[in-house]
Amino acid sequence: MRPVLVPLVTGVLGLILLLSLGVWQVQRLQWKEGVLARIDARIDGTPQPLPETPTEENDEYLSVRVEGRFTGEGVDVLTSIKERGPGFRLVSVFETATGRRILVDRGYIPETAKDDPRPETEANVVGNLLWPDEVDGFTPDPDFGRNIWFARDLPAMAAALNTEPVLVVLRETSETRPAATPLPVDSAGVPNDHLQYAITWFSLAAIWVLMTGTYIRRVRRTSTGKA
Image 1 (cartoon, rainbow, N blue to C red):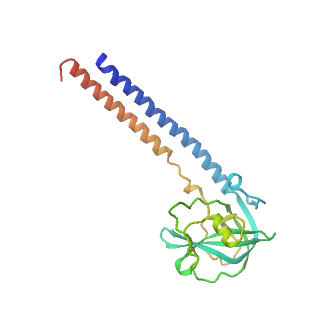
Image 2: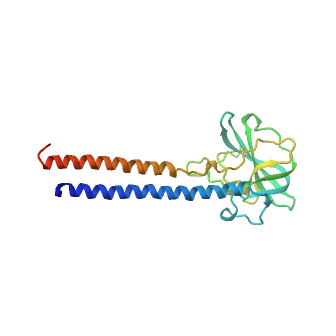
């Protein structure tokens, strides 16, 4: 018994650790599914008036309705859509009926439409508040000369266009001829890899048991002179 005691204890401790990590990932999966359900409910909720001072903590994904006009100002954010190819997100200045200047992500336009005229347009817009997290240390600076941005950098866009740092991602518009194809917010972009992680840890636990069992059998055969 003594020769196999150390590998046996090591095997049990390793198994407990791996199973604990797997169970923790299952718990995280249940938590994340609850978060996603709340996000989906907020995205599809009844549109609300635009809050006076919206914040990411309290209002992200909130469904809102705003009335006013597109002023013709805006920026083009480089993007690419599957099966449609490269193009831009059209982020436009929207002046509400109460005089607030905010930003509206109107959706996708192809490269060929970049220089199309964008006149002032009255509109009733339904969308979701969003604080995009797209900027990192590798994001190039905007090309102001060609009005091309490489990420939806909300504070920088708001400063450049003299608006509030508020972005509504359009879902519906009253425009008869929308300037872009809407790319509504959904929860598909929220990472949820906990099931894969749980499967990985439980699989490692099973492999650990097999390896431990194999090693103990070899140790016992050696100790009894049967190697």
